[in-house]
Image (cartoon, rainbow, N blue to C red; front, side, top):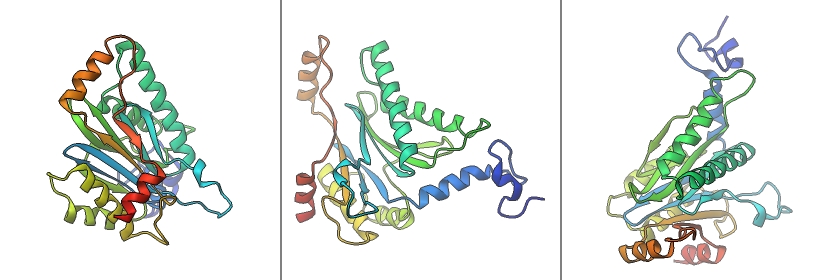
Length: 256
């Protein structure tokens, strides 16, 4: 007999519990809430995504830890939850972006890539012999149709566009802080500082350039768009609008 916490339904992915829940998805969300805090903020001229980057041992080479990843020149992604699951999804996202490039000669709009990722994650909730991905994702991107956008994708395959959002163990406090600090006129520079302040609210230990990671989407100006159109008239790849900040840049922002 099923109990209040899911009972026998806790072990079934494809069977709804009497209360209408897929309990394995709730377990996946619980795993996400145990992960390090990550957040994203959409600004008037870009998007910033940020996360804690902590190692389990002082002997680990932290330079090899990558939590903010570039999918293609116009899209970046960060996660909270299980690192191995994230690695698989990043690989799938990069293959999807390259497939889109081969067909259309351009990288996918952010929403298209998010839909592909959400479909992969949803399929893992409807098949026997698999489990949901134990990650939530924040996807930042830029395209000519929608401009700079920020999306969150959860283990269920649900996704939403956000002005600012947070995931991970300090998600509730981080969202509360962002609700107080966010405004529609925020610039990218202010968004970076707000992201650092938000992480600092629930940060354990000292926050340095080695314990956090940031990535930014920069909206190109009209002059840059025109020059990019000329440069890309041939087969050249577009100029990246997403990049990860270097440790030196993060150190400078922390010192401000």
